[in-house]
Image 1 (cartoon, rainbow, N blue to C red):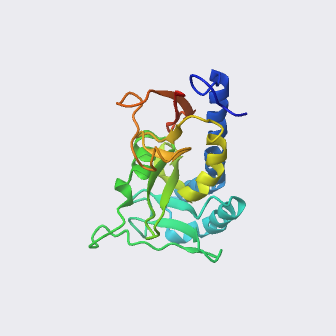
Image 2 (tube, one colour; image 1 turned 180 degrees about the vertical axis):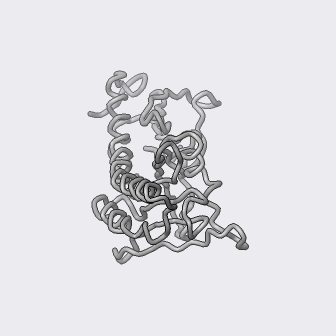
Image 3 (cartoon, rainbow, N blue to C red; image 1 turned 90 degrees about the vertical axis):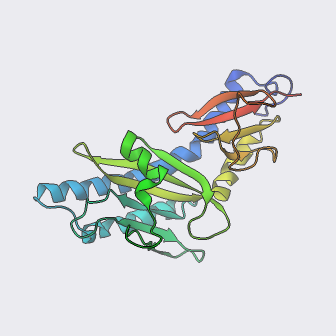
Length: 247
């Protein structure tokens, strides 16, 4: 399918909706990879509660092979694991059980300073990808933003809330380099021959089929400039497909 011609590139509403649905595919696949991690984490918390205690760091060791498997099953992920609600563990106030895949392909633990008393802590409870799942009990994709590991690249953080007996325990999450996700999204987006962009909940560009829309820039459909049609791509995030009229 090539979307070209007059109006919205000569496409019917069904054509554009089909492109939007295809763009959602890799996003949904990433969240699917987080399912086993979230389920196992919830089981650990529930088992500790049933035993009359709070979970401890050692209980989370079984999540490591699941995180490694998620990264191995899907080449999009370079990091995966769980990030815990402060105070959940008996032996650590804040904690991440997080794995990462190095450039050499090996898996290892990601160690960050999360102590709020430190000079420059990784203050994850205040980060959007943690706050939204905690406060709204829904999944979230944070970014694009520059990679926290210091790499000169944009990244996205996918987060799935984990709730046990009505209590928020934390998130199961994954880090995805934007360039890797773009490699899957762009061939689909380029089926639209007019300017088009996939934008996040802040109307910031995740990827586009033209340099006219820079990554991370805000594009408002009702703002000045060319008119843009808004087509939902992943409604609950929400991510939208913006399509310019041909001209």
